[in-house]
Length: 239
Ligand SMILES: [Zn+2]
Image 1 (cartoon, protein in one colour):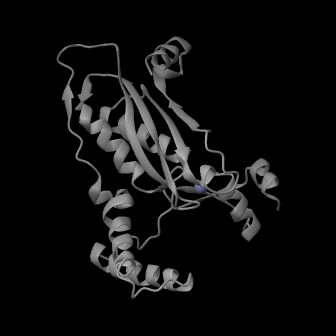
Image 2 (cartoon, protein in one colour):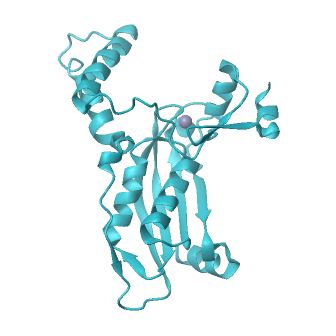
Image 3 (cartoon, helix red, strand yellow):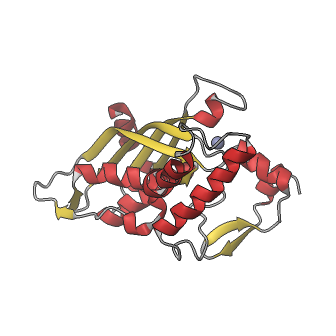
């Protein structure tokens, strides 16, 4: 089945609570999914045994695998500059740029009663965001803008940054990142009235493939009152 037909057919199957395509796409289709940056699920696709290994075990394995990649490329790992690279990459993957895969690293979110009876929207804009494209493992970087209208609970402002950062520290597609941030805020604040906009550049677009250096990608999630035109416009005016 061609990719376009796959999209049109909307034949989906629910596996472990995730939407997956029923057809078994061949390698060409997987490449098209990657090149078109299509998300196939709103949950990060994880294996059942994702956390059977400790961070230390994962780093040791990744270090070995990355060493092989560098050797295959013909690099001389006895060179002083290169010899620590497999270890640095392994540590960076597990402890930094993909640390958001581990639910144990989810920031502790405390919410407070809205004592001021503040009833307008709260907007936090220009939150710096660094993520990684799951199709090419190249950086996605930009700004996230988040808003909510309190239903009685408020959240510490820095916690919004921490939620954005947590979900960004995964191999991602921008659409999924946007939805995951919105869903977590809705859960924490017990409200549907949440908006998230992400404006980001993808290095897999600027440095390879089409090599467009000037385009950026905007994604948005509007729920509850933010689906109303006036509320959405107010939010967009602020950001
Ligand atoms: Zn990419």
